[in-house]
Image 1 (cartoon, rainbow, N blue to C red):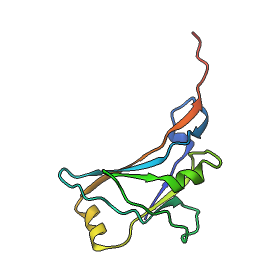
Image 2 (image 1 turned 90 degrees about the vertical axis):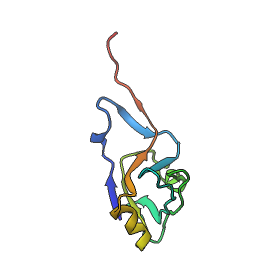
Image 3 (image 1 turned 60 degrees about the vertical axis):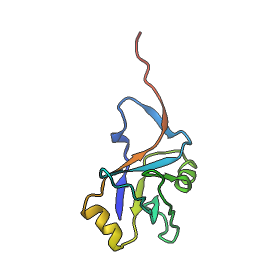
Image 4 (image 1 turned 180 degrees about the vertical axis):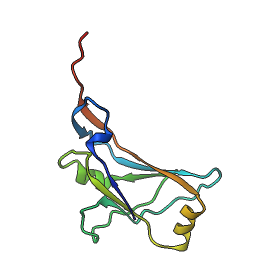
Length: 120
């Protein structure tokens, strides 16, 4: 399981009222050259969510579209949350990471914000 905390300090400076724009959250799996197998995500959810409310799914071309989680987050619109990412504990999944077939996981989210007023 991976826990990730998205905090306002990681956003560009000077932006106010940062909100999700309604687009789906995406996880993109950077895979080793030549490795094209898709990876099953057992759960991608709020860290505080009940473990019984799994939001699972499969990838397409290395990208997992988190439609259910997007729907939950769009309620209050804040991108600053703690998330959990879980994979089933199988030999195949352990091999994906131990043999670096999955080299990185990128979280992509689209936000809107108020820009500061700059003197012209």
